[in-house]
Image (cartoon, rainbow over all chains, first blue to last red; front, side):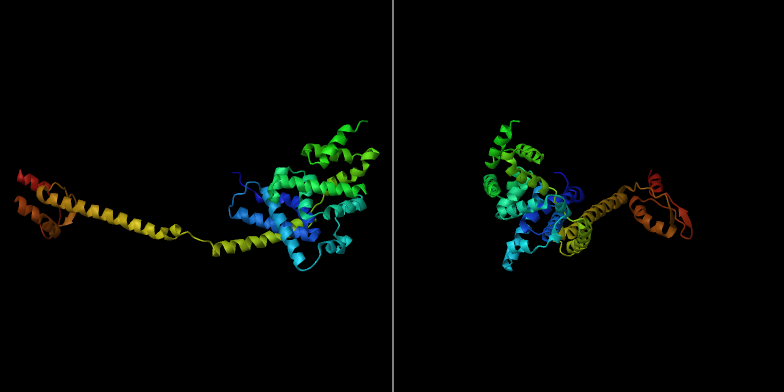
Length: 164
Length: 176
């Protein structure tokens, strides 16, 4: 099996991991923390000489699980996720967002973020990252048909909301 | 312009029947400016998906992560040296090696002892060994004594001086 180079194979995944973490945590700072933690975990696996078949899928899985755990902890502290989004001031916006049609982006982003976690994660990986159903199933540790069901529901919900 | 293909793709998209390539075609199509009015309502969705790909970590992420990794690297080294579990076989390996070394030495020692013992006996009967060295004469006397007695040969030894003696050969010559 191919040897994994942390610098060349894992580190460049940071933006992809960030987008996934952001879709789950809905907060840029928290998402970056999740990415750091994910990268450290994968780095340790590499250091310990563990074999990883698909380092990208593995990293995405770790990132998603960490982000979900983080979400659960937030809920334990009785901080509603939705409140958290509204509390976020504009300072957390990326410079990119200021360039594009911000209002439209924010509206659709909020729409997508209002979906259940499984639906928005599946949609993120498919429609934003362009991954195959098989890869998404591997990352989310569910069956391919479950992936399709989640994406189907997500697209349907987005379509309904856009029609209004 | 005929938009049937795009409409078909769109229908299949909602049903999750499109391939990754077809979805890419949809994103590219909706990224252009002049999208027909009846499809325009969905344009924002596909442009949003494209824009969402541009999300990046903040600029100082790499620097911050380098520090974290350096710290983690130190911690990891310490943990590794402190808590590395050594399997039983590996733990007793040095003792096994030592035991093996002792066994080899004993075997060699035993074999050597037997070999030397055997040759000394042979020396006693036939005395074929040539001791072509300078030896102190009083020692030569000792060494030669059994040869003298058994083969009735005489070795001429001058006790006070160093003598070059051809032991055995002298004896054999005398025998003949």
